[in-house]
Image (cartoon, rainbow, N blue to C red; front, side, top):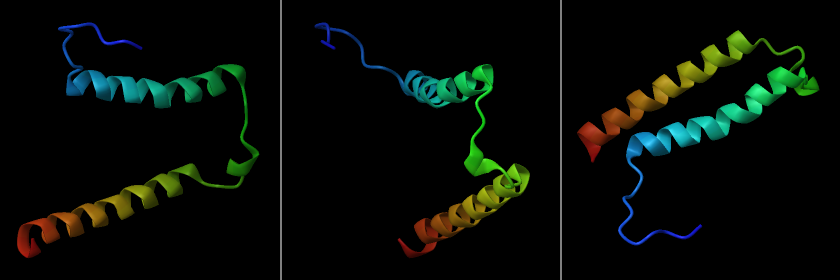
Length: 71
């Protein structure tokens, strides 16, 4: 894709929306076609999500502490 002379760069919000759509489109297509992933059978997605949020929170606190006190 060629850039037009004098064209503005994409703002941060536009990039974030574009990345969200790139991630959401395959998920929406899977829901609409009724595709099931055999690898997810037997996994409690609520438990997985809570673990991911918990680990993310701990990592965020550690990173903020490192950035504030030891950097």
